Length: 188
Image (cartoon, rainbow, N blue to C red):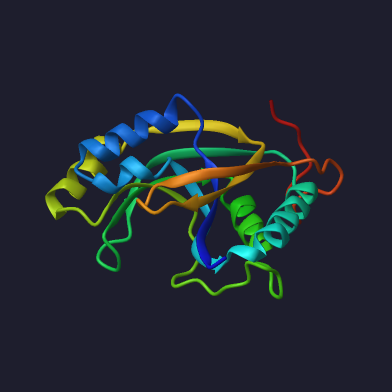
């Protein structure tokens, strides 16, 4: 069966997701055409295609233990000069994203892997484009703000053309079993 490249992320909902994707394309980041706007939980990871059922079972268990949490984006930042990325900052919900990505990549699990850099939840606005275009992206969206309740995450697979295709959504079902350390509260 070979291998497939998978990713796990929290989708940025509409109308924000498509508007941010259009902005990213407008800054000259052509790769954005094949990347839905998201907060990464598992970066692109090559796995054996035959492992897909075990991976989906694992992600289902992660979702069953999770519960909705607020996420808010505000303002821009950059990973430059370390990596050529400009992004929107996650100013609320970052700790919940961190705990969630740890569960997705749990030691001994089917998606166990080391990261190239420490986990930092964000929404990419520009990646690997000219420095002046990255400066423009960082300045133009410096006052951007959006907020929503995260109710789950999704599994994506990269197709032969490099486009990330959604495969399955995993909705949080845990009510009493909140992510460790999160305060108990309900959001609409």
